[in-house]
Image 1 (tube, rainbow, N blue to C red):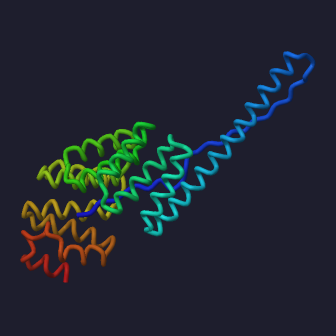
Image 2: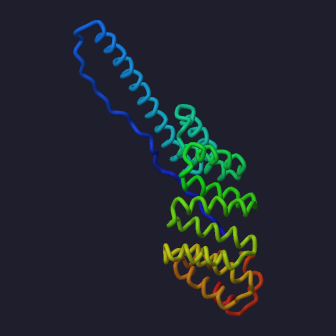
Image 3: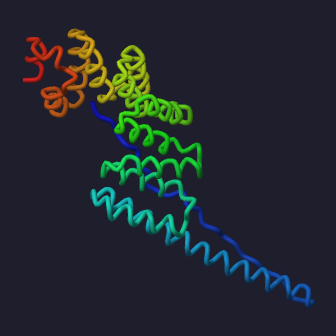
Length: 247
């Protein structure tokens, strides 16, 4: 089995546009104009800081893509130091931590993002992945359900929810979750593969092979290789049809 993280690749940092044109015909108006100019100056400073935060955020994303996770975390920390309410930076910081298997720290980062914006489906989804890695499967399902409630067509969340349910041996619920993913994306090869795993764990050779074939048809080399060593297939490994399929 395997599950996938969700990366936010672009920031949602907004920039201010402003302008003013006042006539100064009295001391009161002069005073107002000075205040207005001071506000404009402050807005320029804030806009510049926002740009700097976005620069660090984009740098972090590039480092994350390059698998330089420690450096990515440092860049995200710099972005957060300037703009602490950037849910996107907290989420991708969590992804970098999760890539280093620092799952509890990753959870804390995702929780920060959720505290800023409770409707961030990426935060809930990645939180579920971190909890799955910590074998907290029931809590993981709660997080996946939150992600799905926000974005019902999030096929990856349906797949990873199915994996957590499989770990709890709630196979029928897991299969229903995989089927939801397939209904959203008919070529969702991860769903077919994990369906095969769920059936194999129940010693259902026919349906395990049927779904493994579908996964292999979509991505041949990956799943043929994976199925050779995946312990989920241990109950059907000696089956001749299974052996012919993966050889």
